[in-house]
Length: 182
Image 1: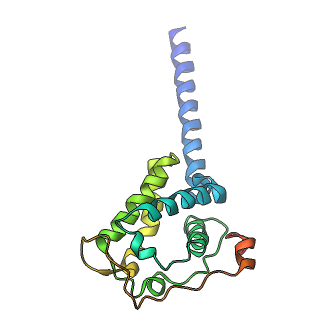
Image 2: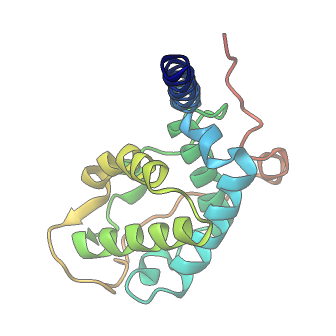
Image 3: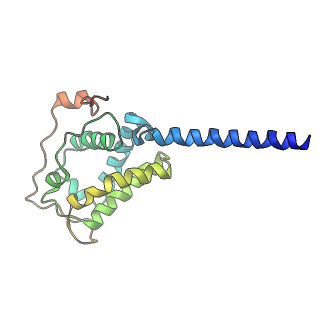
């Protein structure tokens, strides 16, 4: 009888482990976009993030000439695309959009801190947060022009911001240019 009970227990344990492994495999197959909650969740985080940036004196001077509607629109597109979502980023390259802004390493790091605070506010799990930050980290080389820990530096007078988005594009939303999935 003990052998039968031990065998039954072992089978239950193995089947439980198989179910857990299957659940982990399913989660691993989901895109980061899906694990973050999709487009509406990304929009919520970007909206909160934009508010933090606007209030953050360490970096808000760099956004003095920025069209905030355009920035939010393209941030949503960019995060959606970078996380495996159905969007296609159509904004300027990071290098082109930040040329002559004279962004410092300190200001870039402050921006990342604001993003992390927004992700934390929405209880984004640590693995997804790290994966998102890893996807966005390579942009630092194209954004930072000044190797310095300084923050709160003025936006240079020669910086030329991008034009505002057309009303038609804003109305269509950031996912209107969805790429076709095979």
